[in-house]
Amino acid sequence: MKKWRTWLIVLGFLGVLVGLYLIGWKVLHNKAALLQAHMHIPRPRPEPVMIFHVRGREIPIVNTVFSSFLAMVVLVILAGLVSRGLSRIPEEERIRRPRGWQNLVEWAVEYVINLLEGAAGRARFKKRPLGRMIFPLVGTLFVFIIFANWFSLLPGFSTILVKAPEAVPATAGEAHAEATESGEGTHAEPFGLVWLLGREQPGEAVPLLRAPNSHLAVTAGMAIVAIVTVQGLAIAAHGPIGYLKHLATDAPIWMRFIMFPIHVVSELSRVISLSARLFGNLYGGDVLLAVIFNLVGIALPAIFFGIEAFFYYIQALLFSVLTTVYIVLAVGGAHAEEHAH
Amino acid sequence: MDVKFAAALAMGIGSIGPALGIGMAVARAMEAIGRNPEAAGPIQGVMIVGIGLAEAVAIYAFVIALAIIFT
Image 1 (cartoon, rainbow over the protein chains, first blue to last red):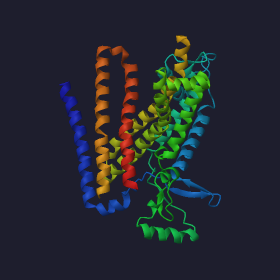
Image 2 (cartoon, rainbow over the protein chains, first blue to last red):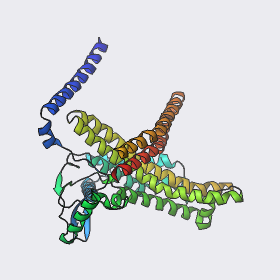
Image 3 (cartoon, chains in turn red, brown):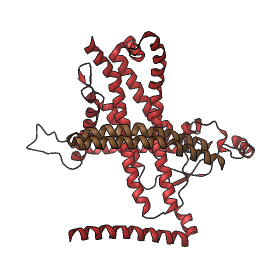
Image 4 (tube, rainbow over the protein chains, first blue to last red):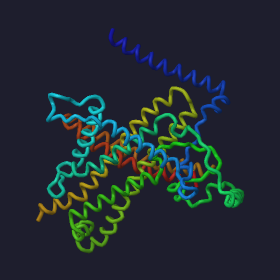
């Protein structure tokens, strides 16, 4: 009897989904033109687009940077609001207990601390537990990444369009000449630089907000901070000479000449792997959502929003846990050596 | 058109390896959890990190595919 009811609920759910899909399909086919006008999602490109200038034309602002600053401002305001009437538990347990938002934030902070301490294990840096020591940096990275990622799932991201500033008249003619010459115009700039600096689309409608981490420069900045911390802590733990020895491993002497460059390259490639992973996932998620929106446009995208929310959480987790693991690997070597000698 | 085909090939071939790797990682993790259910938490954490490392290869393929399409 109970089994039947479960199956009925599942079937009803599927029926509702299929019905919504059919309605969406029908609407899409009947009013394709109307929907194209109203629901057209601009096709995302990997390069962020410049949306306005600060100080005349000196500092161009691209949309990902604008939305990352927006995310930071919202985070700071939320933190200020939450930390206004904090209650301290051990001393005032009878009088005040954490209420409302404080509970949530304490839970989140505890979650991140447990995560980092679990990843760091029993590693220590100068007799202090490593997980708790690096929490301010890696925890901040985690909070910013996950907040910026989930922030970018809100409605309005990459759908609100603004008019990009017009080109400077003097260079407009040149740009136009280039565009007619090469046929495509915006592709004239060297590859890679555009991904980092953003693209100019003078006078066109461009999205005002975009996922901050779908900009290679944003993720590369965070990855560089993480890797510089790793190298700095490694040098602080081993000393400069010990650090070079650590890179050269304990192999026989002729082998060390081969191992040393390999290890240097592998240390440097972590910047690329950390930043490209986050960037690729965020940009891929953007493309996936746009494709699904253009495909069905009703009901189905909701499921993909859920999937993307999970993926974004995993990416934030990975970034912080991998940073922790790199730090533990770099610092933990000294620990092992101390015991060996 | 042929350029887009190259991007599709890069993504398709490039995602075979990570798919196999992630499948093996999850299979072994499930085996381990089945043998020792109490260690499910740590195993899951390590598994997710491993999956992320394997997935990075597919992401490189994706970035290369983007580079092929958009340049």
